[in-house]
Amino acid sequence: MCGIIGYSGESNAKDIIIDGLRALEYRGYDSAGLTVFENNRLRTVRTTGRVNSLNEKTAESIRGKQKCGIGHTRWATHGEPSERNAHPQGNDTLMLVHNGIIENNNELKENYIGKNYNFTSDTDTEVIAAVIEKEYKECGDRIQSIRKASERLRGSFALGIVFSDCPDTVFATRKDSPLIVGRSSHGNFIASDISAFRKHTDKYCRLNDYETAVISKNDIVIINREGRSLSPTWHTAESRNDSADIHGFRHFMLKEIYDEPEAMKKTFEAITDNGLPDFSKTVDDDFFRRINSIHITACGTAYHAGLLGGHFIEKLARIPVNVCVASEFRYNDPVTDKNDLVIIISQSGETADSLAALRLMNSRGIRTLSVVNAQGSSMENESDCIIRTHAGAEISVASTKAFHVQVLVLLMIAVKLALVNGKITEEYAKEILKEVQNDFTYNIPDILQRSNSILPVADRLSVHRNVFFIGRGRDSILATEASLKLKEISYINSQAYPAGELKHGTISLIEKGTPVIAVVTDSFFYDKMKSNIREVKARGACVISICHRNAKEITEISDEVILLPEETSSLMPFSASTVIQLLAYHTANALGRDIDKPRNLAKSVTVE
Ligand code: M6R
Image (cartoon, rainbow, N blue to C red; front, side):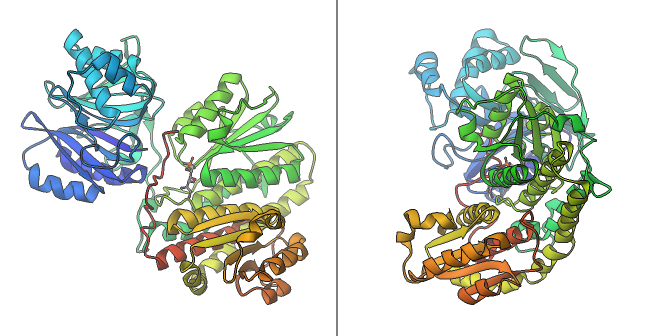
């Protein structure tokens, strides 16, 4: 979490930093701050709230010439969101911005820094500044003091540092939290990801754990853990597309739902050939052979994509799959075998728990394959194989189009596994792919065109405080994702249950008027779902069904229906998924919520 940018160059540092922080706000937005060298003296401004308030505050207070500085947008971990706890933090010697968590900060405070230091915040970040200052006073060398301090820190950190006696230079280091360096024609950058400086350059290099970068206007020096200078490996970022622009939509979330057909098409085209899955650009067919079992791990919505992936793989390829949230997987000591495959799914490629799960599997020598959307991420760098999704930038905290393309890739992996292991025919595989194409070419655009028909249902939902989602098979997984989406952006409490499970306890919560949203898109379960709908209706529930046009009886027994276009096979969750996202969106909108930046959340969860 938290976004970091640092700059040294010819342009106005404050403007570049504020602009970069706007691009990084998806990482956290409860407070923001910057430090710049103004006439060779450090000037720090911090504020609660968004980057816009930082902009207003600095417009009044920083007017002089400044060519170098660091900035930060925060998602609070240690200490409440407040001006006092916002970054940069520091002392007379240095100021720094920090992404990550220092686990031994109390220990360092008490046993290493001691009582004479006057701490002014509740952050673990201020402790880092105190440690670096102490080291600097002892050794008199800035780089050495950063390296020595880093060795004392336990936890994760990406740091951007400016020393008061070294104008126009930014220092940076990291461990387990991403940090990159960029070079442009007018100056050099550090940042937690490329979006912060992508406007200025496409050239970037990654900093590895415990490496230190020193950037000034004309120079970039990278030093390794042992103190030796390194020559950086430069990468070129993909060309910028316009997916980071809002294009007249009221919210990024809505715009990103409308991006779904295009994102699916791009992803589909990148991993298929002649109507069949083709991963040969990154993974050869042999990779998919001799697999005993598969583990899929991810967080949040990506985890739900993983549940669908597991469902597809077991159904088509008949290989056992264990799907587990990464925050549990990493500590479960999972049973693995050298012939297993581990699939990690992540939009950002930086989610701390997913990354830790990947590293654990790497350390055991188990095959790892990551499905990642963001280019240049840590996961991309550390996995055996990568399959990129092509959703473009996803700005809204709620994941929508990224989910669609993750599910698409996982379905293609399932088809590939089934083909190479002789479980399905090419003919059947081609049928599946044709259906996916139909979904993004016709069915999803059809739903998007009728998006307003969901408004009355959303209005009706918005007055309730408790909602249930039910479904069976694949639809039960969609119900779980629908519940997360609704909670995340509308703050309405909801629960998702496999429809057959309600009567084992939860049905006692149903009373007159309780909304129950039934996802009924798999005709295999129509009869079972009819019974489950009747059960909740008999107890007073108001049932809203998401079903196909031809599901007549479901329509008749429901209070409201949201109709999907033509009936598809049990492998196609895409249209229903668009509907549940729109339903969550319109409900949150009816409540006037801050949809793209829901309270307490951040887009990229880089702390565990
Ligand atoms: O970047 P990732 O895909 O690894 O992120 C995983 C989750 O944090 C993310 O999907 C989160 O659950 C979304 N905000 C849900 O809409």
